[in-house]
Length: 443
Image (tube, rainbow, N blue to C red; front, side, top):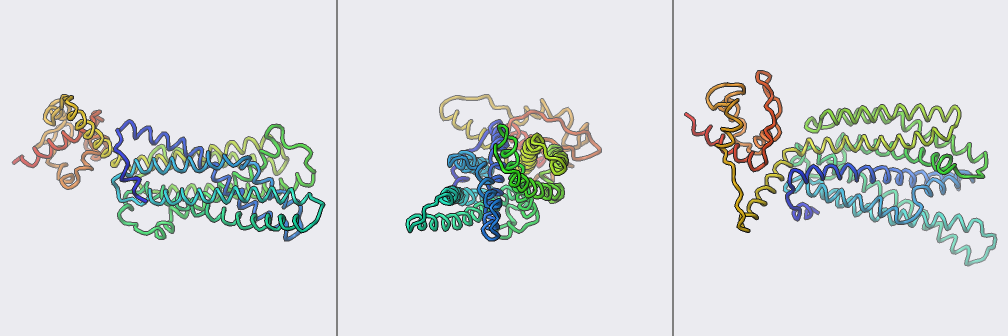
């Protein structure tokens, strides 16, 4: 399934930046929807089975109502599920082209399994509605009973497969995105099973399940009691049943989530950590504490406004998680992105040359004289360290030198941080080749 990486084309630095922005946007659409869908399916199956086993009519009603809000029609599954998932796959294929990371393969398989899961989810929803209609049919004959039996069997089978397929697809999704944000593991991890049971993937899977239950519980309360004035003519007993079941679930799931956010920060590779990453994690935990207060307020004295506030705030928790993930990915793939941008510039220059368009090429010696010589010399220290002291560690890692030139980081506390020179990837490659050549030729 790595063929997507093979057919991807190099991207310019600007296009890679846009790609990360698009990923953030798609994540905000995809993750809340699939979390709500997964949580709704699990709870619908649970309450449906519980209601039939204990002859609890309220549980059976909740089984139907909890899924109705997330699946008003079949096209929702395609627009908010399948399309965003495929967009994420193509974005990762662009960002990881030329690498040995298995992330794109995992995401591609995950997207295929997810598409199958949405088919089963749609079938389960249709069977659930049909069963509800047949319950109100007073006429009893062989044809009606056959249809009722078939609907029940379809409901049970489709529901189980929908949950199974969505669970597997999201496990592959989280494993693939986690693996992509840790370049140190691209060569080391060669097995999907090994990857799925790594600590950071397990933490993210548990966090996803907790968020799913929280979003489903709060979403059901919001759409039942607040959306467009709430559903009218609900029985008071059923209203209390909904509040007791869903508020308890939401409170327990929310209380556990800050722990797993903290664990995800601690387990994240150092290469993906940044101020934005920590800021997004802190923002997510802060939002969860605010939501806890709204949920506790609803437990003490139910207010529909609180359900709306809690529901929208949990969406912003997904936003903070998306920013965390994409910040980690951007930092971890920074060197890879610079190499892609360099390949793009090189390809662009070669294409223009074939068309007879000649561009003025700035040589490495010209760049050294204009930008580098004020702070650096080959044999002695100036404002910055001598090249003879710092270039040896880059002799066998040209990509690392390019990465530093394009995005300087403070390395030695004895010298000031090198300012970003605003070089294009091709110019950075030119100056890297020049100073490395001069360093090797120096006596």
